[in-house]
Length: 249
Image (cartoon, rainbow, N blue to C red; front, top):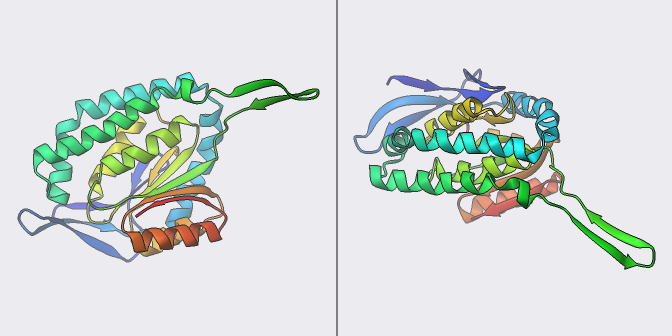
């Protein structure tokens, strides 16, 4: 066992401070290759506060500047495709070719996020009523979160975080505790690409971390991909706390 994974908060890796850990296995060999710290509610709050502090300045950037960061992130992901695929293979068990394919699907969404200046254009309608004009402006929500599954440890975080960030939000990812290495590495690449510290955070853990995200008053929206029973739980719990919830089961 040669690795211990904590969290990525405020632009750096931090060790877990809780008492609970989960094992990380290589499915091809059955060997335990490391362990991952399970975040406490306090550690989730630290990630959210880092995101909340970083989000206003990030949102104030013109969309074209955020798009340039997404372009750099896309390039870094492509340069590290083989490394990401190995991480997926070693912790999930996909063949390398399958792993590369799933990472590539995620990179395609980052490429889509590069077009955010066009996607964020508002609308203006003149004389929709007597003496009334209509102006529509798109604004970021603030801090958003994503809860991602075991089967696509790179692709689904890349479906969620880049688009949310390109729109001016800060983001907290809670990946599966079974294969946490990819989201941690993606967060490091995002920092290298120019995403400011705190705009993208990763908290590892189990149900305690999920519940802390769903109940946190400073998280405006949550996206989830996973099983149908858990999707129903995420939707009911998140909306009960006033959040926008996308729950795909």
